[in-house]
Length: 551
Image 1 (cartoon, rainbow, N blue to C red):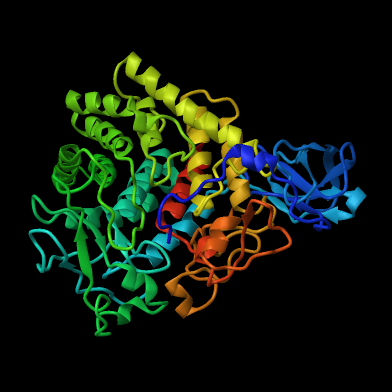
Image 2 (image 1 turned 180 degrees about the vertical axis):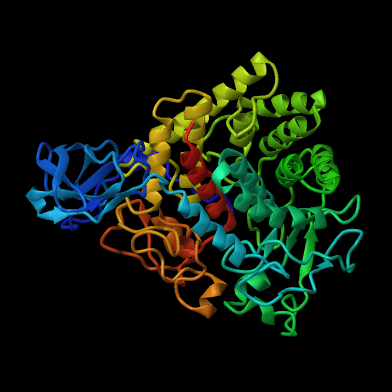
């Protein structure tokens, strides 16, 4: 589980990196599944110079249909000395294509091209959300954590409230309003963007929305976390057995309120208001709108982040970025001009400037910018000046993603950190949305590259989605491993992380395709690279939904 935003690796450091080793075996990295119109560029990594050498595109019968000359790829080639781009010319019809480089006697795995593109990956990842449902929600395990929860701290200390259900966050079983609200909001937005998956996405988001309603059981009580580090440290187990375990903090879990002057910090309150308002637009359930207003009002009254909670997980130092998104969503739901004024005020703040965190759980301003600009499947908001500013901000976020995609040869548009796949998904989605709504040049190509990086066009030649794509993870760090390997299906693992972060957790690394700045291993013990989490999955779903529908 991600314990905070962590240390990101800046683009300059990536670009300056040199290969960690010599003699790294050459590899032809390919991506997909892709739609026929998607950008498709294979990357050839080699310690031998191959510039100007020939490559050939082969169809499913092994017949050449295109090709060209290898050209140097932009950005760091690490772990190789060189990396070359090989655009898949001639691969514009459905089929399975391979890239052949005679100079190194290598042929790639197939690159699938399909009318439906990578849309079915959304269906797979939604299975992870189903695996991580709690209470009586799960189709995969018996009812669990039916005693949730007894409040710890504040005026309701010792009181029990019904907090059963919702999502377990990651490889352990703790619940967080922070990531629940983020994931629910992003899934609701993805449902608007992608009509073909709307029903499934809305159904998944509803799990988080129902729990957010429960997390505000009294006017001055907002629950930020259920469970604590005892759950995190207890190890893998069948969640259905916790209620009868008799173990303190496990059999009967504690609920921790986000105690502030308003009842909850603006970081969580803004995201919760966003999720609930988007849900109201879908359900027209007045309780969703009432709850959205109350969460938002609490964040506004607090005017600061939620204090650090037990375990220090997902602590956020920002709050105005989340409140901007909540205000924009509430304006769309209510037409109340005061919400739009708030949204623009928060979006203009120093906490909402375009930066390198690119829309993941600890930086949500890009969501507000996309919503106001009209990039989240609904019309633009406000007057011409509001839209101009929001679209400009969205373009700035997307431009950072595009720059980052060019800083490494494999097109990963985020920052390498603990939870790189969340950055990859959010950054790719932002580039795609900015391309559609704000006219960002090559925005969709960057989004396609993020998808390809996730599903195999990376130095490791692996997919980072359990049960989908080539050499997908078999040993994710997750409690579902008690039911067998390669579970939970659809989990998006953290992926490559900076070497220092992995080593700081006590893990020894040194695989043949690790670089000087990032490493990855499919090993259950390694929760840095191999643990799946809600925010990794949600950001990836938004990326795939953006690609599934185009502009």
